[in-house]
Length: 281
Image 1 (tube, rainbow, N blue to C red):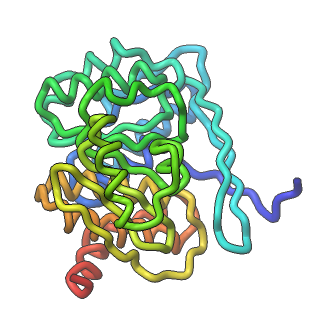
Image 2: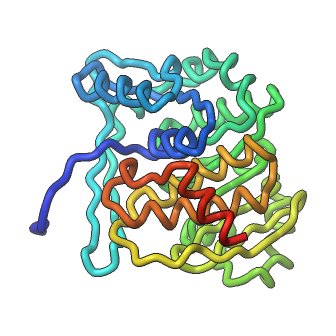
């Protein structure tokens, strides 16, 4: 397949979400792993300049920094992503546990599936014992997460991930009759389903289940939009504990992130999100 053009950008779901949260004014500490190459060192320095605490990022000798090839379809901006985990795939549960002080200080822990599953599980369990809210974005989708083994405050998925998680597609809020019992069985308090340009659905056994519209835009590049949503939601929840406002802000930020190319350069600042939020609410 021949591409029309080739761009190099910083990315990775964890870093995208960390930068998104930081852009929303949150104090962010990141846990991950990079290689002992120029890319890894440059990335740590970049995140530090963004105001992110990088002490939890391990530098792994003789491993390359993780890389992803992202294919963007010109017609509608939709994307396909192929990931080479590199050093990120070598992170250990012990290295996650070593960050216990930061986890305990945090109001919410947000994690994804781009590190080994045992690290995801270790981090979430540790957060629960520390009284820190847990937010899981199970992406890229994997089948080896032990659903039901621990309580999760928030799970953020797209439409296809929701179908994989629940065993069938969710079409509207009227599906709460079977979605909520399924969530209780899986020990998930609140499930948030992003649906691109369609409204976001949130089903909850502990908060208010809501459907909220997205901001209407003409997308240029959807890469990182989901990460922007997740990072913004986590930051806003940590700030105010207001579920509805957190969803609203995340919807706005996720939509704005599609207006420019790249996963991180397109992330909007808090001031821009607040400006639209004030008019929209």
